[in-house]
Length: 192
Length: 277
Image (tube, rainbow over all chains, first blue to last red):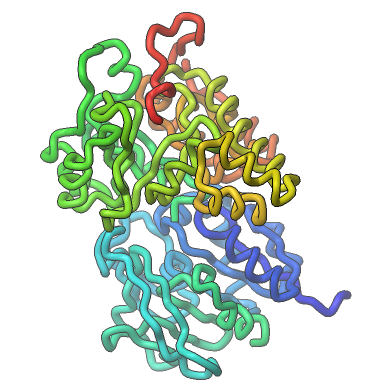
């Protein structure tokens, strides 16, 4: 077994290619995940941003919901960004009635809560536990985290509301760390 | 965040719902699909804001709308409506035969068509955030999309082999700004995402575009001009995700009914892809 971990990146739709580039830049081996059996051989998993309704539908049609739920229950580290955070949450508001959530982290998300594409923005964040300078958080039609359960640690906030959170091995961001030109969040995830 | 997804042309809120239910990552709101614009002739303009808003209220995924080439006031109106992206599109009648919109003047992101690398880089220089290969809209014929995608990706590959002196000549020949040419030579990709449009009618067409290097696909007339739009839309979404898996492509391509009839390039009176400068 090689020392570098194999990181799965869910590749149904969205920003999976950029996550792959950042992770490979850090020396990780990356497996794009489009089928359930591809989850068997990976040590960690990234759920990228994209359109959460599209991803949920494709996961359901491809029989991926149960394998993904099994993976997040296994205790292996998972990073969900933007739409990936929605997919990991316990509940999503303003979603579609048939939209699936994995319930991997005890928080409630609300889709597109900052507005439309033109309301996208970048803001420098202080992230608890992340050393060095502030982190440029790129928010594109980002969700907000409406509420978090007792076991959830909030790591960063935007306008007082959680923008990054962690519960056990599950970490979520409402922003796109793969667009930051700063690999520290991915580095942290690989070290976790 | 449209990568790996399908953007579908829709002309009514009902069609927008079908598109969202099928898994589209965005919809393009317009009054007539390109196939009908071809038949009807006349001047094709920006859609009625009421119709665009009706679609915005119906779906939760991003909504795009088209402005005429060079018609920056149509773009201002679309931005005011809060559309998520503006497509400065050759499918509509051009408003300016020399100038495209100065897209840096807007907050809303723009997508623009291109038939070759020079055209793509000129649009990027003007502020486009995404490029789509033009293909030939409203034909249901993938041949032009393949030509344009191959032209763009082939020239990118060749450009990466050019030495610094040759890059000056490339910039002159492409009619594109030197810094962008140098950037492409260094990175081996466009500075913005490359999508494919114009002629996609089947799941196999969508997968072909993806295997040729597109990062997402636009499907216009191909869905709602077919016999059974809902299953076809769904199949094209699944084909775009699983574009490298022939077994899944075979499965999703089954029993979709008749695709749009389509037009051969020799029978074409009007080539929309020639619009744009």
